View 1 (cartoon, rainbow, N blue to C red):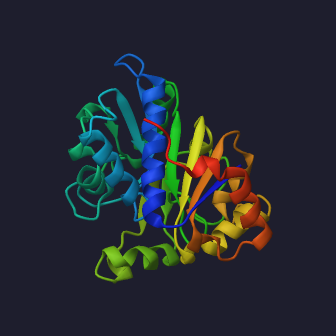
View 2: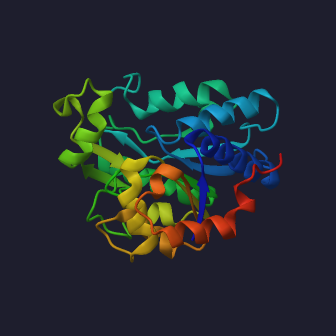
View 3: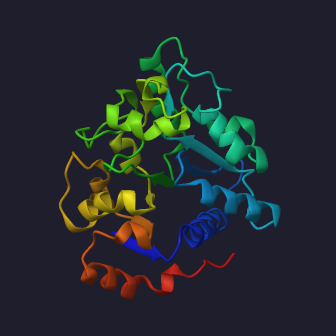
Length: 268
């Protein structure tokens, strides 16, 4: 497991965007051989998405032959609702790049049969050959997607009841009223994420410091679902200084020493 530490959230977003763009460009995707990305929502990836849009506008990356699968979606929110993850992705990324509409895959939280929707999502991922790189963020309790503490580390895409803590954390998007946050969501499973060839997990801010300490300095634990990253063959944590507040000084120094050169912007 690699840990790349940036001074600020801004430099983190720029580096991550360049890293993703370099992966796409190196792969040289075609219509019949697309590059497959897993993508998150929330505050963590916004800087990355802004920088990806900028790189696209500069002609440094194209999404024409990229296929995406998003991590999750609320149950019951219309797709055009300002807090739906469909809306989020089109607002922050898809509307500003050249990705074909048919290449975008987001779970349908209004499907008549939610269980079949989840099964179909897994089938689509399998049919295309799996996900090359899954970008993710985490919650203060270490959850990834909507895989709350206690989730099975081999779980697949499914319907999930959201904890009150998650609804409180997300209430800032719903007028600070937890009761307005949907109580259920569709989410990829921990096993779904782990099947990706590469994972890049963003950890930003002091509020995520305890979760980062758990995943870096302690063992794999289903109560901190992001700790599954320790078992992945190609996992990277990209964090800012504030997120390292609860790591040992020696741990921070170790990863800065071995990853210092890798924190520089990838060449496009």
